[in-house]
Length: 420
Ligand code: HAM
Image (cartoon, rainbow, N blue to C red; front, side):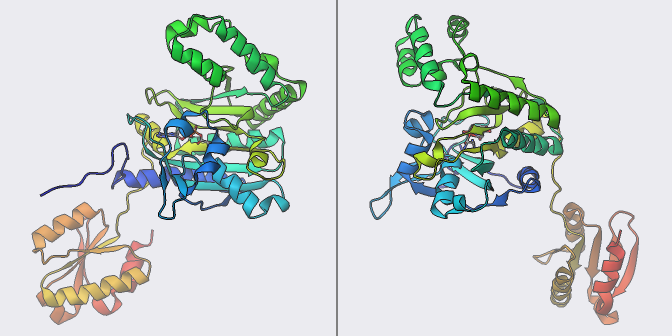
């Protein structure tokens, strides 16, 4: 008989880990809601052209990693590799850019990239993202960074740093790009790196090989070639971050894998994760709205990797989230007792009490083992003899104390006993 396994490179979260996964996502989402971001539920797949145009043809994400296929109507669709293009499309399509600005939205869920799987790098990855569209204010860039920082801090994380830089804008980047290319053409680089230098020279700055790093020591940097306006914007972002008490390190060689970034870009890097150390990242994208057919409006946002943030919590030994456990574990002994306790369990749940029951006709010993494992505070045991008296035994699983509880008033008594 054949068996099935999950597709390669896709993490699954089962109890008890899944409780931590949910808690990580929820803590990060809460930080976004506190700053006025409303939730948007985006399509899991969209028109392939949206990502090709929005994220950029020359990026690895678009050229190598997209899950693209023709649907039954022959349209080319792509499983979303990231969230910014979809949010921007939605803002334009729904006319939100004609209302109050900035439009502040957050999203969470799965994204898909056909990458080579390794620890912390998955083909189905989870992100919690925010986008603030329509206002070009450096204070908004700082807000976005501070939200992520606050979310990570509330999880208890300490082993990360924020790397920050400015990628300039249309008024200064083309000239800088040409200057960098000229510099790169003068280096003894291998064929593939040369090709990259022609296509996307900024990516070469991110090369991790020590021999290439040495060659790049004197490379011109964007931060030294910013226009007056881009420089002022960058200075203000840094000032606001300092006011907010958010610590950061400038990294003028920071390169992001998506084409739409302008001005502020940043990455949250965790030291306990090995090669896949980016737990989140983002930046400003002032041309994307217009690129996707909307008004000339700017945007800024981030995507935080929920999987990697969970790995970071584990690396720091943090316990995040509470296990789903019940308050009461019902132990019926015999069929008649079971019918009665199934009813009581239903009543208790309606009253807001978390209840589980020993199914499958287990004997007292086996059922009590289940009760212990469930983490419940009380076991409610009903045997044949108890049925005659109309009272079950309520056992405190911590102290071992036991007392009879009339079934008629079991809900009230148990709610009273659970009160802190
Ligand atoms: P990104 O840097 O491509 O940015 O992804 C954001 C985060 O998602 C990364 O920092 C990382 O934690 C996580 N991530 C990415 N790929 C993987 C993977 N294969 N496995 C596990 N985790 C992964 C964006 O996606 C932009 N849309 C962020 C943004 C929003 N910029 C502006 N607004």
